Each structure stands twice: as C-alpha cells, then as structure tokens.
Amino acid sequence: RETWGRSIDFLFSAVGYSVGLGNLWRFPYLCFENGGGAFLVPYVLFTLLLGIPMMLLETSFGQYVRGGVMKSWDTIPIFKGIGFAQFVTSAYVSSTYMTLLVWIIKYMVSSCSLNLPWSTCGNHWNTENCVQFSSSVNITHNITSSAHRVSAAEEFWLFGVLGISSGIQNLGSLRSDLVLYMALLWVAVYLVTFKGIKWSSKVIYVTATLPVILIVVVLVRGCTLDGARDGLWFYLYPDLTKLANIQVWMTAATQVGYSTGIGVGYMIFLGSFNNFNQNFHRDVLVIGITNAMTSFLSGFAVFSSLGFMAKKLNVTMENVASSGPGLVFIAYPQSISLLPMPQLWGFLFFLTLLMLGFDSQVARYPILDFRLILYFQYSYLSQMITYSTFNCPQVVHFECFVTYFIDGSKRLRSIRWHREITNAVMCFMSFCVGLAMGGIYVFEMSIQSGSTGWGLFLICICELVAISWIYGLDNYFKDIKNMIGEFRGQFVLKICWKFVSPMICMAGVIYFLAGFKPLQTGSYIYPPWAQVVAQLISFSSVIFIPGYAVYIKLTSGKSFSQV
Image 1 (cartoon, one colour):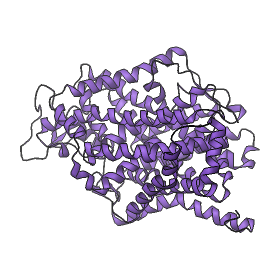
Image 2 (cartoon, rainbow, N blue to C red):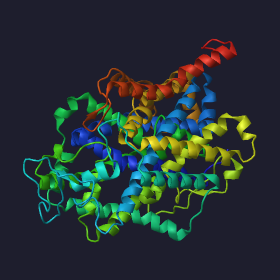
Image 3 (cartoon, rainbow, N blue to C red):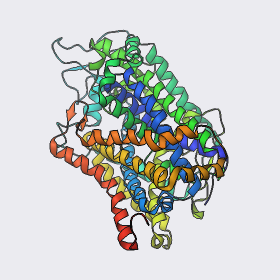
C-alpha cells in the first residue's frame, strides 16, 4: 500500500479533516442551545474519554492493517459489517457537508451586492418585524415595541437563503441558485478526485495565510462591539445547574463524535497510509487537542456578536436569535456588516469558510510547509494530490466513500477507467441526494440521525468490542508495540477502550432510543412520522453489522465463535 510522502503528512492531513466547519459552524450553535459555558465542561470531558481514545484506536488499527476500511475489518470477519455501516454513514456525512458549502457560497456571492442583503430590511424576503442596526446607532429601522424584533441577518438566513417553510411536511420548491452552486461543487469534487490537482506555491501561501487573518479580524471586531462582554460572559461562565440536564451531556458527546470523525472510518482510512512505525500516538494527541481548541476559540467570535445583537435588540442572550444550524450564519455576517468595506470582508470571510471545507489544513498552519503529498492506494491516483492545497474534509469524505466501492468489488476493479466511472456515478448520485438536503429540516434530520445520533454511537461500541474484547487488548497492544514500541498511557487506554468509552456510547444509544430527546431544529419539533423516519435513517447503517454477521455464518457453515 502507498504511504504518505513524509511522516508529518498524516498529522496535517488528519488535522485538516477533523478541524473544519464542524468547529466553526456546529459547535457554537450547540453551545448556544445548551447553556453556553456549561456545555464546555462535558465537551472537554468527552474529548478526553471518548474522542481521543477512539481516534487512537482507529488510527492504530488502520496503520497496522494497512488497508481500506472494508479490507481492514477482514481481520475480524464477524465484524466486517462495521465497514458497511461506516460506508452508509459516510454517505450521509458527505451529502450534508456539501449542503453546508452551498450555503456558504450563497453568502459569498451575496457579499458582492452593493448593500449587503443581511444588513438591510428593504428586501423582498423581509417582514415587518425586521430591524437593522449599526455599532453606533441602536436601531436604524424601528418597529413598534410590542412586535417581535428579528435582526436583518436572521431574516436573510431564514427567508433569503433557506426560504424556510412551516415544517418538514411542506418542503417547498428547489431554489435555482442553490441548485447551481451544488452542481458546481460536485463538478469540482469530481475534477479533484478524478486524477488530482497541483497548485502553485504562490497560491499555497495565499490560501495558508488568508483564512487565519480573516478569522482573527472577525474575532477581534466582535470582541470590540458594544455588548460583546455579555456574550462572552454567557459563553465562558458555566451555569452549573445546566449540567443536571442529560441533554447537555449527550449533545456534547455527539459533537465530539462529529468533529473528530470517529466511527465513520476516516481515521482508519487516513492511518492506513502511515508508515508501519509512524508515531500515531503523538499525532492523535495533537489532532485531538487542536480540534478542541479550535472549537473553543470559534465560540469567542460567535458569542461576542450575539452579545452585541442582544444589547441592540434589548433581549436576553437566550432569545437573541433562533438557535440551530443557522446561528453562525447570523452571528458572523452581523459582525462583518459592521466592518469598513463590508462587501470585501464578507466575500473574503465566506471564501475563507469555503477554504475550510476545501482547504482547512492550510487555514490553520500558515507558517509551515504545506506541500504535503498524499499517495492514494492505486497507481493511477499516485499523481500526487497536493493535500495542503486541496486537503478538504469533503475530498476525504468522497475519496473514502469511493474507496469503499473499489476495495469491495474485484469486478469493478477489472473495468477500464473504473475509478473515473465510479467517481462520476457517485458525484451524480450525491448531487441528487444533496438536492433534498437543501431544506433545513431534511438537512438536520440527516445530521442528527445519519451523521450523529445513536447509530454512530453503536458503530463505536462495535469497534471497541471487536478490538478490545474479541481480538483482545493483549494481542492488540503487542501489535502496537511492534509499530511504535513502548508508550505511556497504556493502562488509561485499556480502561477507556474496554469500559469508559463503551459506557459513554451505550448511554448515548439508550438516550436517543428511549426518546429523551425528540428530533428538533431550533424550537421546531418534528412530527411523529418524521421521528420514525429519523430512526430508520440511523437503522439503515447499523443494520449491516448484525446482518453481515448472520450472512457470514450462513455462508461459512461455522458458528459465530468460529467465524
């Protein structure tokens, strides 16, 4: 199997995958929904007890087996269904991630308008409750004090971008501009994964430094706004009474799983390209800490803007904006609209977010050499994709997604141009699925049930059981010692892999299946039939784990213990 060009390549590529829009987009709104500072406590705890241990397990497994996700589980045949489950989960992640990038492009294009559409109330989508304001004037578009005040930024997100309907039973129609952006993005993904791409070193230096500069500018500007202190206080000061709510803990666990990518197979996939003696233990610790710190810092930019909006609207922090996945599309644009030359800053900032989807590794490490080369498994892909330049979670999502098919089918590999054909078919199918994801209700259903939720927790449990209990940790630690020699923390890892991490995941499975948290987006609670569909989405991935175990038993004629 091909390997990374240099030992440091895995570190930056994995950071580029795990640190991205999930940190800047999903973490802030979950933190806002779950008590601000109180959410940080379980988030840090689960990063240490679940996120990092699972990343160590998956990376070491991929590095030792040195195969794709499907082939890796041939080591423990009775659990090969995990690979199929991860394939389905990967499909959900890939589709929803692309939808997020479509919304970012919408904002980026809208930034070219003479008047930023999220800073004014005179647009066709605005309601009579719309208010617009600046840093120096409280409200420049007044409404009656008895009316419900909604910021122009929030109305642009809800009505200008989403065209949000009353509920999932009324999906509405396709929006032509978003369909076009979706098509262009999938064409770009195909061109990248088709044969690879190289950019000049000048482009690398620009894409490396610009995102960091822009994020710092927005963060600093947000912290200087009137009312930012209240927002930061809400973010940093924990209301310990919130910790009595199990929802806060389980939401933190799902965010750790989503941002680190555990249970989906990406760390197995990336680790499989390591040299056999790569010090993955050190690399994973750096990746996990960097991931958590990026989420923590992103909260400053969002909550400082929310504090400003709360003061101008004369509402509490809890009521400043509708919670949910659109929160950062309200907070960030509001800060941008108050900068000098907001059109320029808006375009550059959302271009930055797009880079974090397609080039997030460069966005975080501007002072290092980013000409890191990924050699994929097959010789015709070894034309060297420059992972610093197009090292995106979405490309990793899709490349891993395609590899499932190629690794699992000898007949497919026998067809000439099979990768090119497979890529084209997968891109088109993903585009069609993405059209349905454009609605916020379907998008959130897929995120909460397909990409996170009890299905992901159950996959993690099966991984832990397969390696810790079936394969055996004594055997597994011998394998690790063969790779990297003696290392610290073995006892802690044994406790986490055998007991602590499985217990956390089992609590998550019970929590979601017992109905403690109904499926909802912001304040909208899905109807009962949609709740059932959401459970079926989770079931569609995990069914392969027992299903394949039964299949292999019937076809081999052996007992489960012999298999």
